[in-house]
Image (tube, rainbow over all chains, first blue to last red; front, side, top):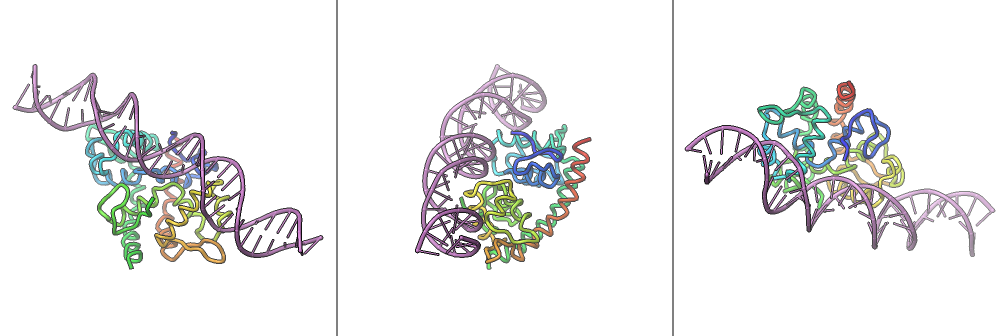
Amino acid sequence: MTTPLPNQPVRGSDSGIPIMAAFDLLGRKWNMRILWELNQQALSFRNLQQRCNGMSPSVLNTRLKQLSDAKLLNSTPQGYQLTALGESLMEKLNPLREWAVEWEAQVSS
Amino acid sequence: MTTPLPNQPVRGSDSGIPIMAAFDLLGRKWNMRILWELNQQALSFRNLQQRCNGMSPSVLNTRLKQLSDAKLLNSTPQGYQLTALGESLMEKLNPLREWAVEWEAQVSS
DNA sequence: CTTGCCGCTACTTATTTAGTAGCAACTTCA
DNA sequence: TGAAGTTGCTACTAAATAAGTAGCGGCAAG
């Protein structure tokens, strides 16, 4: 399993267009969630695992490697934490929270 | 395979918090891509399949059902097309494109 | 020197996704 | 009328990914 990166063909697109690589990376289970949990605070491997509903350590480990390769987070003495790039992604994703609330309203009606 | 919806437990979170349902839905392969392709234009089943690098029809079909259940798109005589809700999601995701370009610059350096 | 938490790895099973074939309904052009 | 093409799928099998469980070696505290 290779890490999807911009500038090279990725799962679901051979164009190498950056946004496609982003879709591929973020479209893998847990990746958005992990970034979300690391927003505002660094977390240890086991803490992160707990917050992600006890996700299996094998998957968490491969995810952490992929997200590191993608330069969205790194491991520090304080635990795993977002890079500046990772933080900037989370900022872009923030509007999603508001959208989800609106979505809830419309779906449940 | 049930469709992740806000207001109910979803894969990866039993809280029912809207954003978690969004992560679950968007974190499934092809979902973001499908919405992306339908942005600005309706597409037929087979057109959509072609644009998504020949994704398998079985998966496309289940995705279309899930996204319909989630009220993000629907089927019309012109083909599949986004609902207003789906369009509003795409607007929120637009900043991602710019981010991805920045990402490319940093990853490839 | 034991107890406990840490970051993992190894392994098996279950779930998801891919891939291929093909059918029934409809249109097109003869 | 009828043969040929297109469309929206469904059915089925195979491959890839994720879940689940066990446990190891390192380290720190008591």
